[in-house]
Image (cartoon, rainbow, N blue to C red; front, side):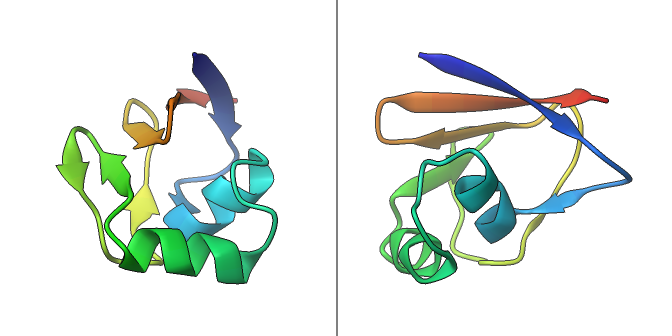
Amino acid sequence: MSIHFAVRGEYIQLDQLLKATGLCSSGGDAHAAIADGQVRVDALIETRKRAKLRVGQQVAFGNEIVVLVAE
C-alpha cells in the first residue's frame, strides 16, 4: 500500500515522518525501527534517525511505502 505525504518546507526528518504517518506510535518506536534496519529510503536501508527526506523520495517500512510529495 502507498501513502502520499505532503512535505511542508524543505525536508522532513525520517523519525518524524514515521510518527506523522502513524507507521510508528512514538518517536522511540521510530528510532528502534530505524536502528534495527527495518526502514528503507529509496530502496536502501537507512539507519540515520534524523535523515533529511525531500520531495520525490520514497520510504518503505513493513508493507507500507510512503511517497513524499510537494505540499
